[in-house]
Length: 305
Image (cartoon, rainbow, N blue to C red; front, top):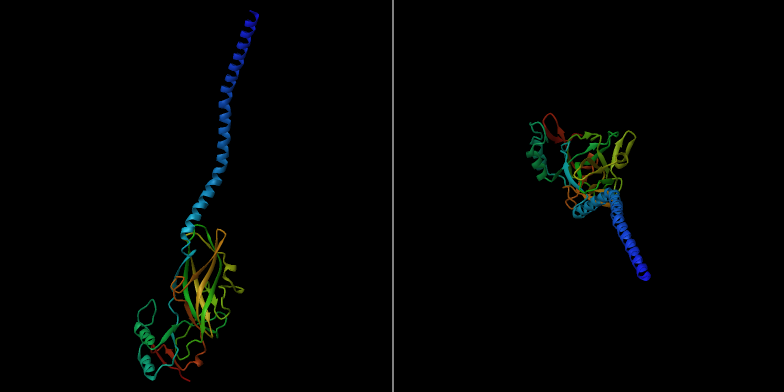
């Protein structure tokens, strides 16, 4: 009887312990799950901004990969109208051509735009003439230079900011300029004050220079430039030459997202079109036939003396 009583007591004690453990487990499980959930949420909350930035960068990188087939900068080139009515000929012109040029009026009566009459321009081009744009170098009124003057619009073409690292010309060809005949209209002086200047005589890859109060300095030493996607930068570019005729292209080094890229710009704004051509200016005495523009008759006449 005693053994049965002890056994019953132990059974009830075990059941009590089991019941207490089950109640404890049921109480603490929700608490533990709640704490774990709060910790997980806190971790996620702290990581969300960083994850968002990383996600956006990944999206931008994917877009850049799709844009990679095109240059980091898109270019558009617009030539300025020549400021001088001057033509050069590689070969000398005949007496008959001189006579026809002398009797043909040069200037149009219309105002605005290029003042040269299309009929005269066509006549000279048919005779082999090339219109050039000489100008006097600022600060050196006796030094006349041959120039190419164009407006170059560069537009960012990457999701990231595109920083300009270097702007320069790359000379592709060099030869003696035409010295056959010259139709000379007085050149203008100075050029645009804020122009980007490329001195083609100075090196095979001359860096773009900007005029400052202290003289000429590399353009990007004076102007820090970077472009957002779709944002344009317009450069007023003047390439100069004296003794030679140059074929050249504009080269722009850029940096974005820790990458470096070189963009080439040719005369039509593409990377593979015809190069720019700048005809160097030589002294008028080196030409064969020379005609000067006569403002009173609005025609060219043989140079006197």
